[in-house]
Picture 1 (tube, one colour):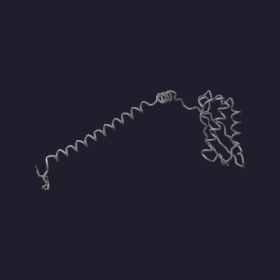
Picture 2 (tube, rainbow, N blue to C red):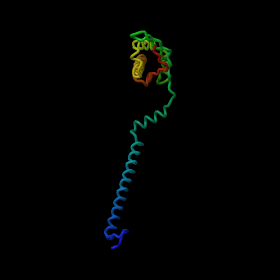
Picture 3 (cartoon, rainbow, N blue to C red):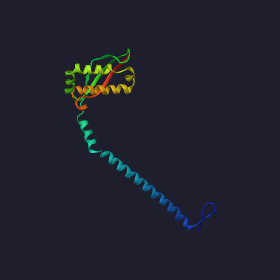
Picture 4 (tube, helix red, strand yellow):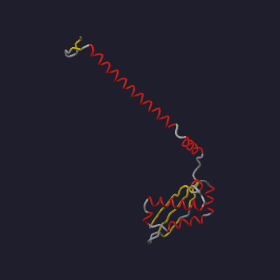
Length: 168
């Protein structure tokens, strides 16, 4: 038997019990660290081995990075439906390539007519919200792609952009 600080008597078995606790805590810490490292390795392996389609598509996009092609349309000024308001807007079409831009130029009278009819059918209330403008852009895209006989945006117009949008 030996004396502890403060005069208490220390039993020989107490040193072993304290050492066992330290060993158990150390083993638990090692297991937690090992699981964390294994989890990080698995997560990194999964993120670097993304599905083949995604990796191929990303590589293809990097390889085929061409500057975007836009076809700017003349200013549209139309009376809106349902009142004395009018809309003045400038529109640019993002197209797949220069050949689509040429098709648009060739069919410009039809495209302008379709857009004017669409714009004229709208009310001020439909167009003042962001959602209303987005819906209009989607409708214009569908109209233009229909006239171009494009079955998908990659063959025609992929986006409609408003550079001005004034309702009075």
